[in-house]
Structure formats: structure tokens, C-alpha cells
Image 1 (cartoon, rainbow, N blue to C red):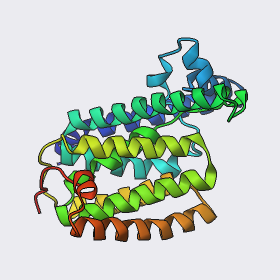
Image 2 (image 1 turned 180 degrees about the vertical axis):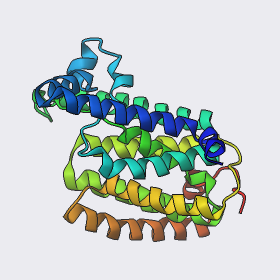
Image 3 (image 1 turned 90 degrees about the horizontal axis):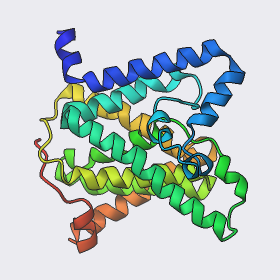
Image 4 (image 1 turned 180 degrees about the horizontal axis):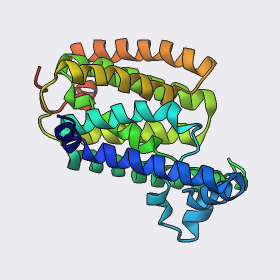
Amino acid sequence: MVLRLLSRVWVTAAYAVALVGVALVLVALGPGIQERIVRHASTNLHNLSHGHLGTLIGSAFVTAEGPIYGWLPGLVCLLALGELLWRSGRLVVAFVVGHIGATLLVAAGLTSAVEFGWLPAAVSRATDVGMSYGAAAVLGTLTCALPRRWRPGWVGWWLAVGVTAVLMSREFTDVGHTVALVLGMVLSTRFGRPARWTRPLVLLLVIAAGFGYLMMAGSGLSLALAAGSGILGATAVHVLARRRMPAAAALVGGPPALG
């Protein structure tokens, strides 16, 4: 039974093992070397402008989000849910498109902001590693796996949470989360029909949504404000969808999910 389950989520399992392995090695090497590796693996403007394109892949395996045991279970639930619903190949596509696509789009925006003097040049060396862009994209792909009647509220909630986080923190990583989320939503319209929902999948959805909220909303006041704006956003998009507004219909469209 365990081997059968692992065969269905082998991408999630392999990625989790890789994250744990890298984290253990970094801890063993000590803070000094760890800081150098994180700086070298960062997908910041300095590294990308110097042709260090390998950081687009390597940064997904190096994390700086705190102790791995605090967030890895939530990430595993999210990725496993995406893999069970969409299969392994589509999970990889979603994660890679979110991770690399959001990184490059954010880098383009930061480059323009630095050139025009809207941001200091120091931002070009900011640390930017981790799995959060890819995870946000996978979260977005769940949109068209949901029953059609739930999609407007889902879309409105997450977009409102993402925008609130950006406005509260004004950090480029929060912009990246929202961009990756939208990329995932768009991808989900091309993924076809998902697997049938079961009770274990619904449980994974609850955990994955909680993890996604903590990842995107931040902490403190932002966490509370994001919840309020999420409710307003979900309600607004739901009302628009019920009135068959063209923009809302296009955003939440896609193949019908199996109930």
C-alpha cells in the first residue's frame, strides 16, 4: 500500500528528500558556508545578469524560510495533492513554470525599477531562494480541479490575499508569489480533467490551503488583513461570476471537475 502510494506521488517524495538532504548538508557546513551557498544560489539580479542561469534550478533546492520541519509537511501535502489530481508530469510543469516564470518576470520588473531609480541598486543582490514560487503555482493549478461553483470564490480569495500581501510588505517576493499563483491558474485551464475528489484529497486540500495562506499572507497584521480582503475578494468574484461577467467567466473557466 505504501509503495503504491509513493509511486503515485514520486515527484513529491523525491523533491522532499532532496530538500531535506540539502538542508542537512547546509546545517552541517555551518552558518558561514551556508550563507555563501545561499548567496551563490540566489536568483537575484546580480547573479542572473552575470549569466548564472543555473540558479534558476538550484535555488528551488536551497531554502531560507526557517527550520524545514516547520513548513515541509504543508509543502508535501500541497505537492502531493497536485500530483494526485494532475499526475506527475503536470505537477513538474506547474512547479517549473511558476518557479522560473515568476522569477524572470519579477527580475524584469526589478531591473526596470532599478533603472528608473524607483528601487536602490542594493536590491540586485537580495537573497531570493526557495520553493515558494513553484508552490504558489501548484496552488494556482488547483483552481480548475475544483467544482465549477467553487472556482469564483477560490480565485477571488487568493488574488485578494496575494495583492494584500504585496501592499502590506512591498517585498518583491510577495509579487513573485502572486505572479506564480496567476501562472498556475492559467495553466490549470489547459490541464484537462483532474482525478475524482475523494475524502483524503479534500483533507489534503484543507492542509494545502492553510500552508498556501501562511506562505502568501506573511505574518502579523498582514495575516489578518489578508483574511479580510480574501473574504471580500471571494464574495466579489462570486457575485460577478453569477452575473456572467465576461472577465470573471474567462478567469474561472476551464474543464469541469468531477464531483
